Length: 453
Ligand SMILES: Cc1ncc(COP(=O)(O)O)c(C=O)c1O
Image (cartoon, rainbow, N blue to C red):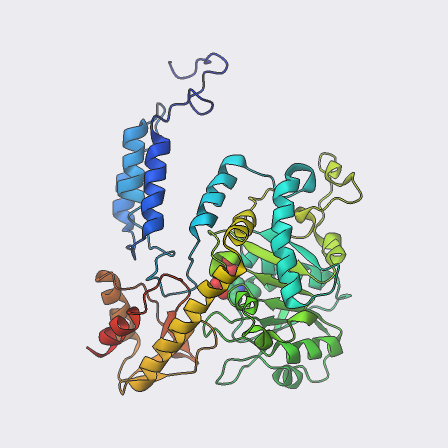
């Protein structure tokens, strides 16, 4: 068909049974199965090469399946780091379960509109089962509820916006010097100021430290604590922080994007004492609850306050609320159209049960303890602190920034692991994060050899 002429109605190759995708379904399923069996450490893509290889790939007539698939499978897919690799030990890894991946693919197919009850009641009801589990585990009172968002940053932003709106004009937010970067970014977007409270050598924010930093100030709107800080994997003194927040009449938010998942383990629950006093908290199932990327559970003690902040109004959208009992996730956070990212979480939990998830979480804890013990026993390395969750921080005698960078590059080159050094109180140090349930125990010896060989 010459470009510019109108095709007969219904003749699109994009949709329907007669679409122009050939055996794409078989190729895709083969690819997905292979990926689920094992994903390598991957590589950091070369910009010049990628740009050159992909230049001109979008044409008027289309490349056709073979060429387009080849570009995906041979150019695009291989030039990434595998965050879901069992050997990805940097930042905060991903380790989606097979059940979660398939249900996520189904969500992409069905496009359940999880922003509203009107459109996506089934999907939202399933997501709410996960939210209820978190509410129960945290010990929040009846009436507490929440919704799923696409990630921890947007979850934190949404919760802090509600805290701000309940603060009667107060504009200062207490944050630890260890808080995740998304908190600072959210405060900037929301026009709030931070009061940064220093943590000690153990990197733990305490109620005592907050009181010392706040003094007699009466302008504190929100206190933010971490249910697992990112850099060191430390759970803040949630009970102490909650106490100060209550005394200050401030909103208490817990950023549990990374670490709050471990409260599902009975033996860990006590460490999160104080979470039951949170006004809001988040947990990212795409981090340690084995969901595919794009999933944050956001919970409020009093969800009706969140509705005051987040409900969007307009002539075409008010129909979402014609039912008094409507339960709309979009009224609770800053996101309208939304993938049902809690549905894969629910499905994997319904299929495998909580115990399988608990065991998978424990694997990361065990590996972190073993790595710590090995580092402690070695004369050339020094453990900075006992890991509380899955993060291990350590020193290597004689290593500075360049040596850490070389170590990371060598591990990547040899496909042993993807690691990213960090700093501890300004000092370049090693950091390893264990969360993937399939990371082999033998990796401890491999890493020790790389540090001492
Ligand atoms: C404690 C904490 N909060 C928030 C975030 C941001 O989450 P996301 O990357 O899902 O936006 C992270 C990410 O690692 C985190 O560790």
